[in-house]
Image (cartoon, helix red, strand yellow):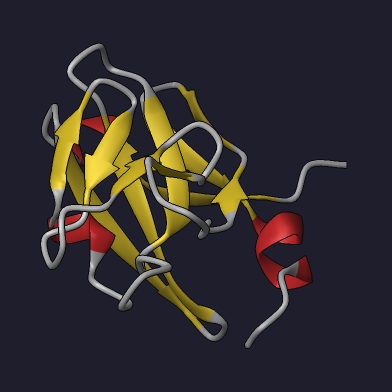
Length: 111
């Protein structure tokens, strides 16, 4: 059984851009790369909780706007940092619509 939530049309996110989905468990950033790949991760950088949705998207990564931490959109891991990661969420595009895994979203732990 599918538990994916329809978020928005793909065209609503520009290439190398992001949008935020607010949930009861916190904000999730939805990214669209220059190559039209879609990713979903927590919107808070593991370093100082900077809004990753306001960062610069390059390749399959985003650079936090506060202190330039680079976060992999594929794994959620901070690149080149000693520690830190954000949650990633399964996401897909069907019929031009972005769908987010609702089950994974509800299962995440809240700190």
